[in-house]
Length: 388
Image 1 (cartoon, rainbow, N blue to C red):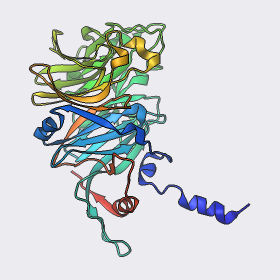
Image 2 (cartoon, rainbow, N blue to C red):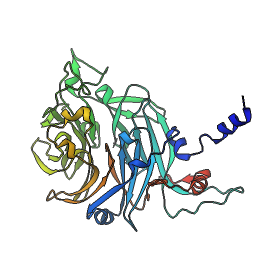
Image 3 (cartoon, rainbow, N blue to C red):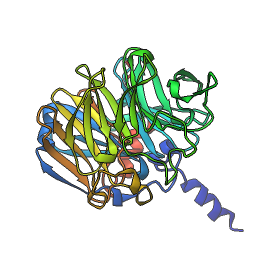
Image 4 (tube, helix red, strand yellow):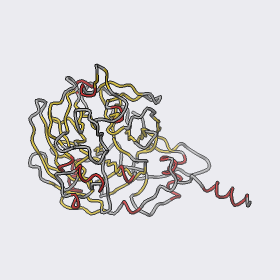
């Protein structure tokens, strides 16, 4: 055995800071990065004065899009990232990672470097989001969406048919579940039955709304190829624990905005606006499985995904083979697409969140195959972060 060669091999491992953050060596995948832009995408993003975070869960990738002062895309690789929650009061961003064991990564903006004698400080011309902590959450949660309810971090525990409050020590507590999962007066938390997958967050769990693929327990469960989905999706009221709306198909990304519940009707590539009494309008139809929704002013930032071939039956209202993976700026009044960014080899988008431009400029790594390893070493060696 050549011990010197073996030791050199060990010495070279875990030198990529993105691999350390993700606990995942061999993290690079440049094929997921090329994109095309149409319409006024960058112009609309510039008018928002923000930085757009996008999770691409099946490609294990988070993207940050920024238009001011010039178009720029940065990235961070994580294991199956899904929900995003921006906590303005604490000055942090949370990202859920749903590979088992589930974890939540918390990031905060770069605030300079701690003085060192052995290395000059970096001089970044931006304020990337840097890792602050990562917490593992046991308990078969199968977390999807993240949301701040009453200032506290919550998640959809899809694996438990419930909504949970997340604690910094890795505990979770159930705070809400729909009435439909109860049997003989007791809720069924033992496995996923209804794909309870998004939170339109209010001030309390009772003033919030939730989307699910169904409102009944059946022999077939979500994920089974024969699970019936067409027009079986619902929006639950947090107050009554009953549906206020039926007729959706695999809904995702429910959000409250201007007194209405906005939701992606994924299986038909649509965005709906729903009143608390259940009346609704179809606002827009897009070229793909709609998932990911962020509403700011008169613009909705909407994600579309390709449809995984084995689940094409879950998208009865889509031209499956023509679906694209991208982000679209949609005018809320007209439903017109103002502009789009499409990832040519993209797959699945889960969440979209627009962060204030003065909060952060994006993520630590360039969205390209070329990386400056020396600059990355200096950036991560002694960085500090801002805290709210």
